[in-house]
Image (tube, rainbow, N blue to C red; front, side):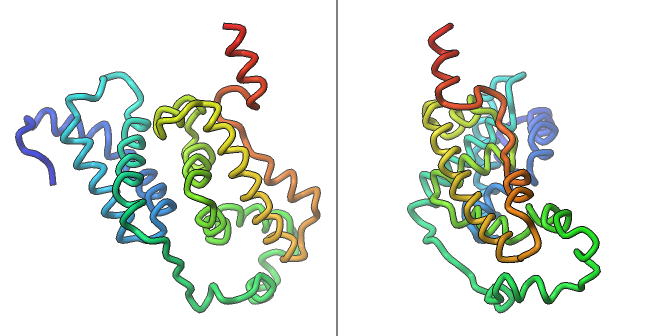
Length: 220
């Protein structure tokens, strides 16, 4: 898999720094490609490129952000043109939201329906909602809300201004929030207030809105 022109010591260093990020890279790749095989190929290509250019990585900087930048660029430059958006509809996914819930045992949510909903916020239903977002919005939502990158880190990864990241994240979250509200209301078990509280997004490290960002930027 790797270029053996690198020394064994370099290879060991590369593995020690990068392998711990394999799972989050695959998770993001799966959300981007929406296909397991394509996600595996994307991660493999990411690691191959990362190893090939490991001498360019500045030691002591954020290796995870560096890897995600390679993954993102690889996806945009190759897979976005090559891989058509595919929607695999399985039999279970054809169930309506109501059918999905009533098929669960009542004991799963009878005592605390709101907690049951909260526990499902990262379920397949939510991940499918993320998958349905337009790619530009989906990418920043994945990086901010699933991978915990800051505004500045996301801007570096995707190669656009911080203000653009904030705008895309705001719009992507609004679209996602609507999808999740529709899903939750369809369950008939959760109040609007509980939904709003549960879906209030945590902000990445940085200004909380575009206006604040611009004010802080002007003050520096």
